[in-house]
Length: 507
Figure 1 (tube, rainbow, N blue to C red):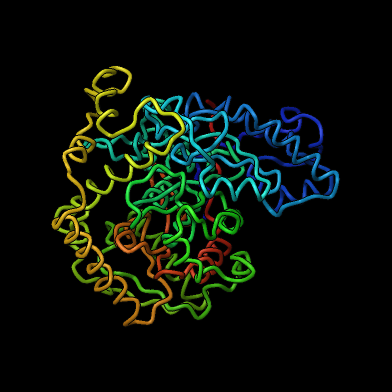
Figure 2: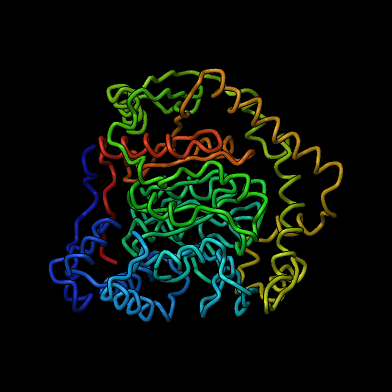
C-alpha cells in the first residue's frame, strides 16, 4: 500500500528531547519489542521514554486533545523500573513501558477517573481497576488518562464526536476535521500520534473498533470476560470489555497478554472466559502465515462502496491478498435479521442499555471512597447547574435523562436482553457455525453491533487512506474465544500489507 502523499514526515530530535540513556534509540513509532531491545542494549531507559512521551503530549495535545491528564508519578515509576532493571529484575514485555488509559478505567493514585465529566472530578477509587492492577504487576508505567466523548458517548442522542468537558474536542491526527470516532477516542489518537507507547480502551459497542479504524491503529476488542471490568465505569456487563489500542498487532497482543485473566471482583465473567486463555499467552499466534488455510466469510452488503473510490478498490485488493496468502474467502454471506440488529429500538438494545447503565453506574458510584456525585440523578443535576462548562445547549443529555427514567430490569428489559442474545445466536454465530468460518471480515467497525450483543471478539487493523487522507480499517470478527485465530489473521494481514503510516504535522 503506497504511503499517503498528504502525510509530511517530520523528524523529531528524540535523543535531545528525551535526555540521557537514549543514545541511538529511535523513539518515533517504537514498538514494545524495540523498547525492550533498547532497555537490554543500554540505548534506552524508561525515564527517557516517559520524557519523550510527555514532550509529545505537551507538543501535540493542545491540537489533538487526546490526553486529559498526565500522571505526576510517571517519572518516578519509570525511575523505579530503571532501578529494577539494573538489578536484573524484569516482569515481562511491558516492564518500564508507558501506557495511557481511557478515562473510564480507575486508578488508585493521583489521577482522576471521570469519563470526561466535570461531575466526577476529585472522586477517589478504592482500588485500581482489575486491568490496571495487572499492568502494574507487569511493570508498566501509568502515563495518564486519555480523552473520550463524555460518558463514552452515552450522554446525548446528538452524539459528542470525541468531545468531553474535561478533555475538550479530540481530533483525528490524520485529517483534523474528520470524525475521530469513539468512545476510546483518546487512546486511539494517542497511539497514532506517538503520545504513548501503548494504550488501553474499552468497548460496549464499537468503542475500540471504530476509533482504531478511524485513526489507523490496531484495536483488539476481547471476548467479554477475557479482561476484568472491575473498576471500569460500567454500562452493561453483557457487552463491556477492556482491550488495547496500539500501533501494531504485536504491541496490542503484548498488552492483551498482560491484562487477561480471572478477577474475583468480576468473578462470573472472568471465570467463564478463563477457559479461552491459551497456555503460553497470545504472543505465540503472531504468525506470518496466519492467513493460510483460514476460512473467511464476507457478509453481504458490508463492502458496498461506490465504484472507483479508493475504499472500494483497496478493499477488493485486500480480499485478493487474503486469498493469495492461502485464505478461503467466501463472499455474499447473509447474516439473519441484519436490519433488526442495526436498529437499536427493534433489537431491544436501547431498552436494555438504558436500564443497565443506571443500575451499574449507581453501583459504581456507591463503591467509590469519595465522590462529589453518588447517582445518575446527581450527575444530571450537576450538568444542569453547570450548563456552560458541560456545553449543555450544544450537546444536551437526553440519553442520561432517558436512563434516569428507567426503573430497573423488568419484563420489558428481560425480553429485550433475550432478543439480543437470540439475534446473535441465530445471526452471526449461526452463520459462522454453518460455514465453519474462522472469521468474518468487514470494513472499519461495520460489524461492531453484530459482535456486541453476545460479547464476541474483533480485531481492527489499518487498511488504507481515502481520497482525503482519512484512515480506514479492516475488522476480523469471530466467536467467543477466537482471539488466537483472529490474531493470526490480523498479524499476517498487517505484515503483508504494511499499511499504517504515522500522522506527521506541524501543530
